[in-house]
Length: 571
Image 1 (cartoon, rainbow, N blue to C red):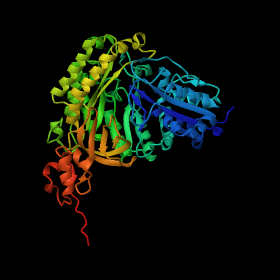
Image 2: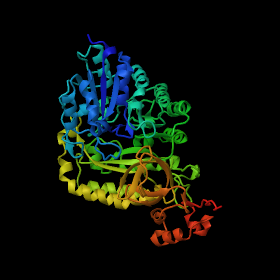
Image 3: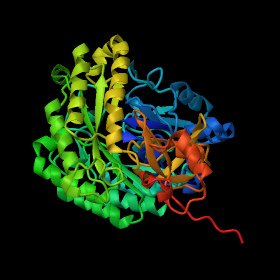
Image 4: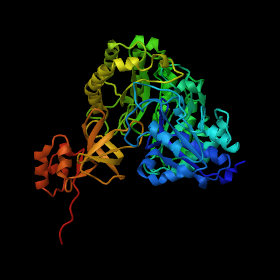
């Protein structure tokens, strides 16, 4: 019998991306945290638990020794929705196999990888279940599996799901592992679980495989936030749920009282938090229960931080695709839900809440509190060329009505065993690949760019942009939060630092900006030229005319972006 107190355990985080769970840096998912807590609860000392991300192992081959020498190696990962990532690169199947081959001790794999593995992490793909050469594959909760595995002396376990009491214990006990994340503490956001499962059965989605919604009590979530806050975490996202509005209710109808206890409790135990965002909100909930939904959205907007996004799973505006894939909301219903979120939460800090959605020249220079985002999936059953036109018409209608969307997420389906799409596979997606690319480019040009100008017009201030990488003489960074804007800043600045940024220009899904406020007496030509209405010639004149004692000397049209700090006089 293996004594838990003598075990050396290495947890490797290959990152996850699920319909209702995200864990690619700067996010850390629940899986490694709960697995660490389960290990501690089973008797493994904290100091014997090592956590590495897959990117750390790529960057430093010496760290593979921790994989090789561990008595137990726990791998968590899996992508059930495809995406493009800046902060980290999810593990590919061949890398995961190498982990299994390297581990001399017992190895176990779990997380959404249990739903299936493709040749690569991308859309328009089919998957199959694969243990990737690990000793054990956890077909239910990886945290429950590692707890039982340790208790059995590494002999085995029965696949099962943990209960709320275990989750509450393991969430608190495993909070320590965030301190081993390379982004800790400044650039790390914790994905928080409020529930799992979904009452609806969309053809492609893996979330229903968790069953009907199962909610954590507010006290359980708040206790976890408290523990993470004690470990230096200041950024949180309530992303692990199919529908935040249904939290604490019967799985479908809103429960504003539960939301009030949840959000109020989080603010009480983490008064210094810097980010409180969410992810999924089902538009059908807003349509079916408009008054309760409005109350719930008001509570969220009262407690969250600006720039929050409620992802709406429209999936397709084509009524034929909707019926063929058991989608739960029509295009007209989704439009009404978009309108409600705009009216209730589309105000900006410092702006008039009663006149939301706030946009235009008089809008306050901050991102709105909460806006909807639209998810569109292609390659579903029944899709034709007309499907693409339905989607474009829906998006154009939202724009023409003066409403705002924070982002439009367009992807091709991944077909997993156990979903209705497994039978269809990726055939339709492959057939429409060329059409999909053309349509996606058109949406970026005709919707995304003008919508982004509406959401974040020139002069919008983005506080605490974390600088991540250099490219083409620019520095790129993002805020922490749900679907943060990528910001390009002139010049190469020190990475790993943060800046307040004022937006100066717009791409399809990114913006350009300058440090805010920009000092006229020290700004570079490149920074000045980026400001709307300046350009290279006027920027040169500004530089030649230094120093300035006031912004008025160069024009009040620059007041949103610049200040004039009086230079010290020579003695």
